[in-house]
Image (tube, rainbow, N blue to C red; front, side, top):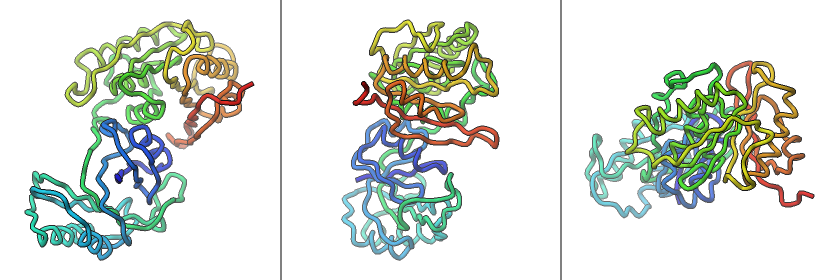
Length: 353
């Protein structure tokens, strides 16, 4: 069993992304989920900071965590360090004291402590829904507890170093890399998968899907977007703008075509997933009406792939259902006071007439 530390305040959305790299994901408490198993793709999750091999859970205080650790079987060798986290300050625990007391348990059992470069890192988390005031919806699920585990995987966090304004081609409103990574992960981007964005704009979603190893296809109705997206893909996936080839899988092939998202020049079943950020009606220049465009794109996506993630500034669930999709999840992601992104996670319906 594994313990995953989530980032941000929207635990439901973060847990949904975590499920793209782990099995049996279940909410434990604010900022924490458990999983039966994990894959190497945890390295490239946007909203999971780290995964640990779970030793156990107990009451949400130092005494409970200490008693649990004292009773645990510790099949480790080498030096150790303890890191304590009061998740979102929800439990009101003195983390320095927690580190000292649990470190004392480890030294009593024969381990040597090395705070700078330990062979093993023990994480202890304290979380309490009653004290969580930072959740996205003002309410927290899960239980009050402490959870202890040996660090297994840390995600690669370079999002702050890769801003859309740093790319060769930039347009206002471009999505931040962290959000784009979470969306393509939920869609199923990974080595061996083909991901299509039929409204690719500056290519932000394609970049993140390509970085995690997917083959990416992009389309857009505007020639300047195809030209600009091509510059960005060449720069990041093939050129000097890559964030670090030793830290990422080899990028898949990429292709772009100028096309209408409601009438794509692609055969059935071309992709494993479609992901797109639909135009926002109040701020984007749109050729024709928005509803027919989004509905047509959803219909084409259903023809081309078994999964889809649609991002928009409103709820398009009815249009997705009419196009044959089942809405498996829907999230509302607040960007700022005047914009909320609606994320629709879609799968092919099994009962389409």
